[in-house]
Image (cartoon, rainbow, N blue to C red; front, side, top):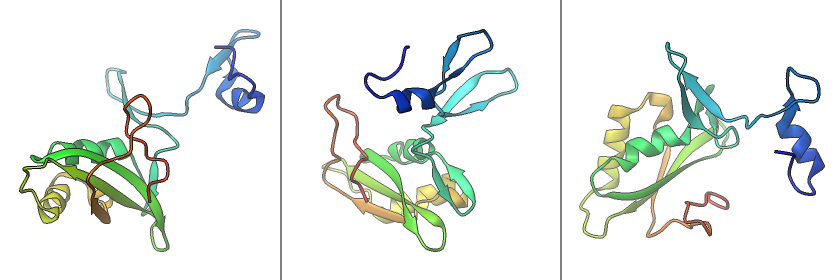
Length: 143
């Protein structure tokens, strides 16, 4: 990769010097976990990481738990400003049309399956989540 077209400062931010002369390495600043075998596991994008209660939370981890709940069609998790926590976790949920799952059901499962600091402070049931042109959930503008 030579850089971002017409965005030199952004290119300089993500292309860092490698070990060899003139070598550039793409630094995505994404978050990974490494296991004892040296395998990497994607945790989330650095710009998506929620910093709450002195902890770093990957929205993907929370979304995976909520998406696994029967009756949940889609979910999106974001960080929102919070005076006490710095950021609080907010979850948007789209339920299947014939679902009888309640917000209390979702909260209870989150409490049972997630670390205390990872449980969303706010939940909102919505009819749909905005999508990008490629069909991915767009978190821009959510609050």
